[in-house]
Every structure is written in structure tokens, then in C-alpha cells.
Length: 297
Image (tube, rainbow, N blue to C red; front, side, top):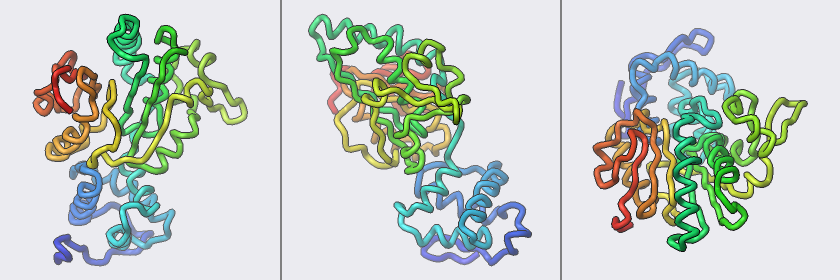
């Protein structure tokens, strides 16, 4: 390998039909490229996974091999559609509505009733702002919308905005459709299915009703960048930071922390490894943190 602009390059490789897996050297440069773009670490044990995902892009683009595709990516601006396709292959994980059921039980039975009680007492306005960060295809955002519509007393009085963001343009486009497969809907309570979704028998998909889509908006966003929004009452950032390096986690949390309004909630995955990075928040559960009301933005 010889360095080019500080990045190692790789000797040419065999034709596509002879490819099996990326070499250790190829894995290293791909991992570096992915890390600099997203903050996500690809460990050596993910060699087979990376190889399989890159091969999909080779078939789609007609590019000859791992090295050629790597060099092609290096020449593309971050907003090029191929970068989005590549990151979708690398970073997409299974998602579905009502994942982590205990979180949603807390949200419906504790958080929303307490919020409503505070509004009735005049201690807060009838507004609710939610950020579903790294929302993928919108499953989490629409789960939150279901809970709000079902559990928030006097729902018609409230102004609710649920923002879903993801690094993948394709994922955001899918989220905007509000359509979900039967598999993605498998944990949705039957009453919620009939109340909040329309079943399309021809495709066996479920379409979110207007009561949900009116609350939800989606946009592309990289967690390594600051979001240009007012703080939210509650931020969901679940099951994604486990893929980040410690340095990237700190950078993400520096961007996310001011997006939690004073007194607001931050919901993470139970195994994110971020407790030491949120010492200015109150830890209520292994996955639940509250920003003290006195904390300044």
C-alpha cells in the first residue's frame, strides 16, 4: 500500500467473478472511509458482512472490483446518491414498530399522562416535540405517533410535532410514505392496527392514517452534525450508538445534548455505553435520562 492524500490505496485485484472477500488491507481502508463519513466503526470481524454488502453495490453499479469501487467512492461528494446507497447497505439494521416494548409502556403509561397533568395545571403549554434520531424507515417515529394519539388525553388540544431523521436519503424517503410491511407491524397491538393504519391486501402492507402522518415529518441528517432545530421535549436515540467509536459517541452526544429541552427526556438503547458521557443528566433507567430543568441550552 502507498499513501495518497493520507489514505492508503490497494493494489488492483481480480475480476468480479473471482471475488470472495475483501482483504484485511481493503477492510482497513473501507473502514476508515466509513468512519470518517459516519463515525461508525467497522471491526475486523465484520469482514464477511462488509464484503457481502459491497458486492451488492458492485452488481448494481457494474464496477469491477472492491478496489475500483473504493476509489470511486473517494471521488464522490457526500451528497451523491451512490454514497447514500452504500451507507444504506452498510448501516441498515432491522427495525420495526414498538421495538423495546418496555420503553413504549413507560412512554404511554407514565410520560404522557404526567405531561398531560402538567398541561392541565397550567405548568406547560399543550405542545409536544419529539425527535426520533437515526429513525431509519420511520418505525420509531410512527410508534411514538400511535402512542400519542392513543394515550394523550384531549389529544385534539395538542400541537404535536414528531421529527424523524436519518443519514440515509433512501430511508427518509421510505419513512415519508408511512407504509410498513407485515413483519414491521408484528408488535403493533391489534386495536392500533385498525385504528391507525389501513391494510393494503394487494401488497400486504399497512399505510399510516392521516392522524399519524399529520404529526410526523422526516429529513436527512448526519448525527455527527448539529441539528438546526429548537430543543425537544423528548429525544429517542436508540440502538445506534453501539456502532460508534467512543470519540464519535462523544461528538454525537455533544450535538444531541442541547436538543433535549431543560427537564426533557433522552431515551437510549440499554447497551449504548454512554452513561459516563451523560453525567450532567439524571439517569432514571439504564436507557432513560432526564436533563435537569436548571440546565442551560
